[in-house]
Image 1: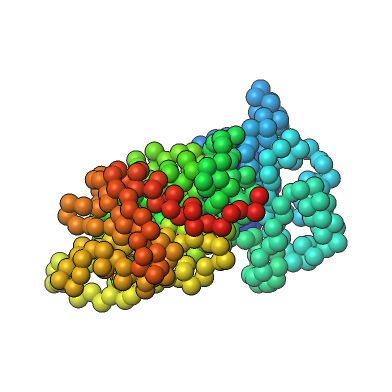
Image 2: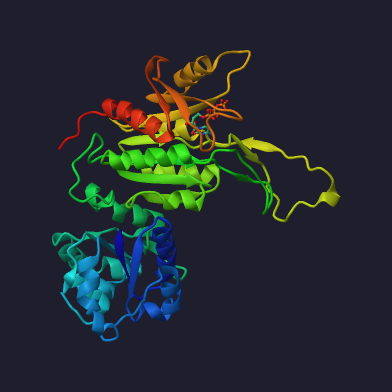
Length: 413
Ligand code: CTP
């Protein structure tokens, strides 16, 4: 998506740098439009280097491209973070005295403003009236967080965390635009939001080594492609997935790169709040080193003894917090052993995990991982087989989403 990131002049401008990074990492084109006061806090080189585009505050330097009209017209979404009391006042008053306020007047895309200021300024009747005016015009103005402000004071006025701003802003864009398929006929997941995890988590032993697994992320990526094709708005938490594979994703997939189980847990748990369908395709490390070394472990110290502690079971957490109507799918990577076949282990796991569907997947040296055909059996939470899928990972993904889509309650619209 093409996103305008307006930045007003407040200390929280540094958090907008993190927001810019998140947006760029998720594959969005971002045009930063700072006010001149914002540049007192974070300079243009930072915005330009991270966005790859000019970041200027005035309407005169980009006059040739008529930037003050073009930027707004071309955007799919605009975010103003931080929105200061002064910016809210100028926007509410319809001013066009710099590039940001001019752009706000030409935008037809959804606009989210994330205010940040001292508590007294936020609670002042003038600011309250400006916020009410903007909201009445359809602008989504977030309430600021409460907490530590610039000095020693605390109270409402903190800029919400960049992840929260990004999630709230992306949720304003209609699903078709988000999937990059404007006007495309709605598929079986039309209007639905799907969050998928892919890849394998890594747990650091020291700054250069980790405990990990052999998952390439290909099955999760295939699910993301299939979900887009089925009309969904798709979010993908990619645990250590090769950048080249991620580059092949269709436009509109919101990607969050994660490394550890804790990071993956945070992403999926946050997305669960508004997802219709959750798919845990990532291979998650069940244990992590209790105390990762701060410095590289040296051979001279002899073989280390590594104490492991249990990671949270993300799927179990999602099932425990399941919203009414939400469908949750897990994968069971099994090898089969003396205690049971692949399917027997899968059925036992399906009963204990409580997910609506468990895709039981035979893995090993020559099956399941990497660029090889896949075979899965779909088992429900009572252990009953609900379907089978085999062939390429794209075939498996499409078959799995068909079965999952059938479990979703009909949508309200
Ligand atoms: N999973 C998870 N969190 C974990 C471990 C697994 O969310 N800490 C999810 C996986 O993404 C997958 C499902 O649970 O969807 C089953 O993963 P698997 O590794 O097969 O099962 P485990 O529960 O780890 O059981 P075991 O390793 O003992 O077979």
